[in-house]
Image (tube, rainbow, N blue to C red; front, side, top):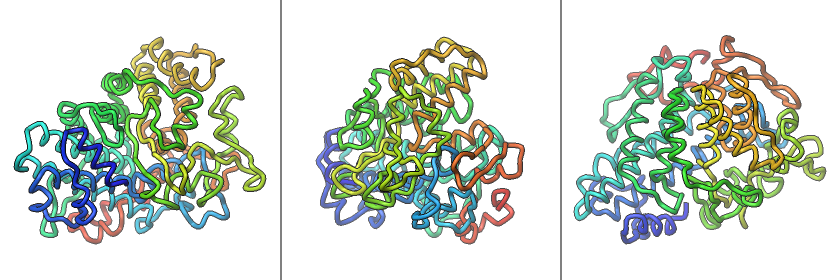
Length: 470
């Protein structure tokens, strides 16, 4: 990510001098703890390095969102001209030694390592105030929670199905080559740590106008996501409201610009900031979606396309473009900004929070409040949308379907299927079709295996602790 921009903005957030030279010549992956935390500026560089790792194409910069939609029913990878990217993911034929399995695990734990280093050492930074130290620790704890929330949903059975089952490795202190190997913690223990980290972050962070860093609003949004997975409906709704309160939803025009252009959009809560001189180029979300200047191998299934009413502005995100693909729907939601792969990637936005609030309120039986929340999203995209009249499970289905239409391509569908134990049905023009429910043996495919490299290197793991099906 653009180092001088991050340093400038973070300095604005806590009134500090930037440390561009330090970051350019001594990245966080190579700096010893004594150097990294000898000053506040150096500690900032470590935090910036952690954000840079978060945006790696092998984690949240590409893999996590792409895996989420390729492990769903609405989007697909072309059966040819795909260069081998994400094909096995789409086919749901994963093995423990595949790069799609190994890379997110490795990079996710690298961010967690950096976060743990900050948490363990920030209190000893000379010359830093208590407020400045706590801001650093809050950032690190929010990042750690962010990573664990992704990892636990990818590599463990859902909280709904097996909260006391094997989760992932929980490390809350810096590790070294001499550190004891840790086994898999219970899923519930991982979620409790996520909640603890985020609650601490909320209490020790402020809100910032710049959304390239997590702030108090972002931590509340992550709490809403976490409580949603845990089906703690009251807390999910409460934190979703805190996250979207005061934000304005994108207009029709901003909806297009908000996913393609450099400028921020009004409902953004957190985004990854890529610029023309620092981006993932071919290994970027726009590269796989946009019709030109990249791999352009993602398409929308016709069954999904037909769910959008003709008056729905979001239907304009799809196109049958004969020079490129006359048979499948191109997805125009994610474009480049001036250069290949250069675009903000919105990770959390207000629309998602309204939908979390709607789902939680429907589950609580607060029908009118649930309808008002989901109708905000429906009406913004379709001025003629009719307010839902459904109640109970039928209303929940309406909300979940609206969530699919609003958030497609943004990296939610796989996790949504798992957290609610939904049936998995692929039909239409998909060339890898599936039809199974949570009671079928094939449901294991919705959980990634623990990477074989981790099992081989970890004395507290063996193949008996591998996820079922692998």
